[in-house]
Image (cartoon, rainbow, N blue to C red; front, side, top):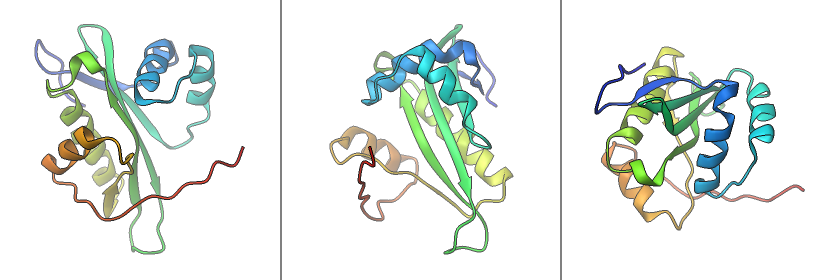
Length: 146
């Protein structure tokens, strides 16, 4: 975990009492939810790691890591399943701190690969991921099952 300070966020494990802030961030990402729904989802994460970026006591970002064994690799693969930084905090190193923390967690769990999926419309996010050394490798296709 990163040390907190005036300019760098404290990266810490998410808690149930962060549910309202997490709901707000998910809304900014395009996945609206209320705090009660988020609190319930937090209980269902299993072995996933969910961290938040805390700046001055305020939750300004989050990242979720999902690790699974992969048929394609000898070691597990880690998916950065969610990452969002509050719109007002973007460009201040919060996203980098979150990705660094999740990469460290993936390495600690013996993962061979760290990957994520992102919406085509998120050109700003794509540029950010490439600056961090992730490379564009393909597309994602999805089908809602509801």
